Amino acid sequence: MSEKRRRRRALKRAQINEIRQRLRDWYTRFMGRTLLDMERDQLAGVLTTVFGYHAIQVGCLLGDDLLALTRITHRVVMDPDPTENICTQVYAYPDALPVMSDSVDLVILPHTLEFERMPHEILREADRVLIPEGHVVILGFNPWSFWGLRRLFTLWRQQPGPPWCGHFLSMTRTKDWLALLGFDVIHCSQFFYRPPIQHEPTMRRLRFMEKLGARFWPRFGGAYLLVARKRVVALTPIKPRWRPRRALVGDLAEPTAHRVHDG
Image 1 (cartoon, rainbow, N blue to C red):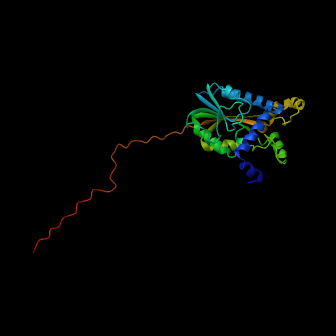
Image 2: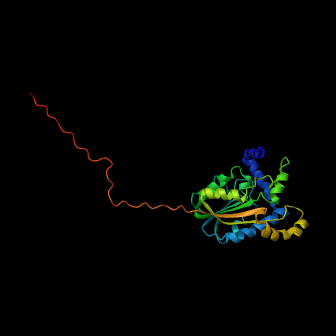
Image 3: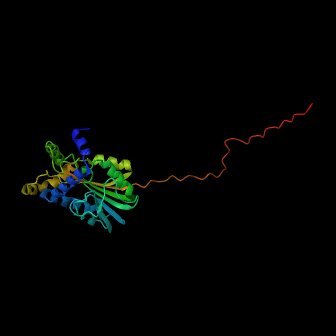
C-alpha cells in the first residue's frame, strides 16, 4: 500500500468532513457548476424511471436537488458533517446509516466513495438498507481520463484540494464490488470529456469535445454514472418426501434373559 493511500485511510472523520466542505466550495466555481449541470442531466434520465416509497442521498454536494429529480416522495439527505446545514436532514456516517435493513427503494451516492476510508463498506451498507429490486445510483470520477491525469499531477503537491485529493475509483472496480454484493448494473454512462480547466472562455471553446468524446473515446469521460439493482435471491424449493425415511438403524432385538436354575 502506498504512503499516500495509507495517509488517506488514516484520515479522521473531522478531516474527511473538512474535505467534503471544500468539495462543496469547489462545486460553486465554474468547473464545479458545469459538472453539476451535466450530472443533473444524467440523473434526470434515470431517476424518473425509479419508483418506490423511500429514497436517501448519502453525502451532500450543494443541495437536495439530486433527490428532487426522482418521483419518490419521501426523501432524506444524510451527511456525517454536523456543521453543514446546506441540505442535510440526518447526520450519519456513510458506512453506518441509521436505517432499517431492507427498507429503502433508492440510495444515491454522489461522489461519496472517493472521499471515504472504506468505500466498499459504504456499498455494503447500501446493500443492507435497500429492499430487493432496490436501486443504488453512484456518481464517480474516472481515473482514466483528463481528470485522472490532472489528479496525478496535482498529487505532487503536499496538500491538494478536492476533488484531486480523492481516491478516484474506476467504473470497472465499482462494478466488481457491486457484483460481489449481488447487484446487477442496469445503466452506466460517462461524460465531461473536456480537460478540467477553470478558465471559462477556454472551456466554452472546447465544448465540441463532448460530442467527439462520446463518439470516439466513450470510456474516457471525466465522470461516470452507475445504476445498479439489488438482485433478488431465488430460493430453491425443497421437494416433500412422500415416502417415509428408513431408519438409519433397524430395530434391535431385545436381549434374551437367562435364568439360572439351582442345581
